[in-house]
Amino acid sequence: MPHVIVSTTLPDRESADDLARSLVHARLAACVSVGAPVTSIYHWRGAIETSIEVPVRIKTRAELLDALAAAIRARHPYELPEILAVPVCDGSDEYLAWIDAETRPP
Image 1 (cartoon, rainbow, N blue to C red):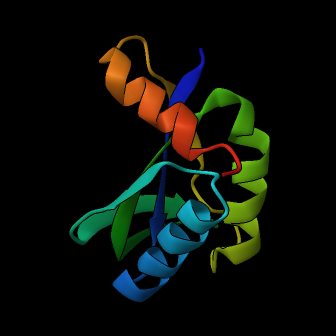
Image 2 (cartoon, rainbow, N blue to C red; image 1 turned 30 degrees about the horizontal axis):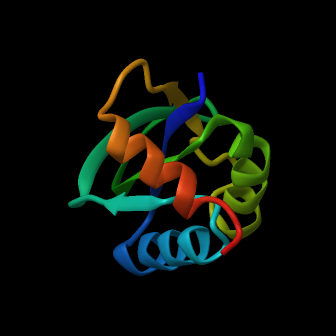
């Protein structure tokens, strides 16, 4: 599992863009895709909640997952942020090499 896609959601576009830029700047991610707002329906503290959230997909190396999760928690406004990592089982060699190159110090 050398590469992963990590997903999280944020409460608004500004916080999603800020997180995305900070992760790319720190080279914890090669690319962060900020999506269009979605409606999330979930259980929280014994009640069913509904929120508008902005989904974020983060492309990185698996070995950076702990540092990436710590960076998300440090900047995330939620008490319990979504941090889900999905292994990349296949991809173009060129794209995966680009992820590797962009997540290492220059």
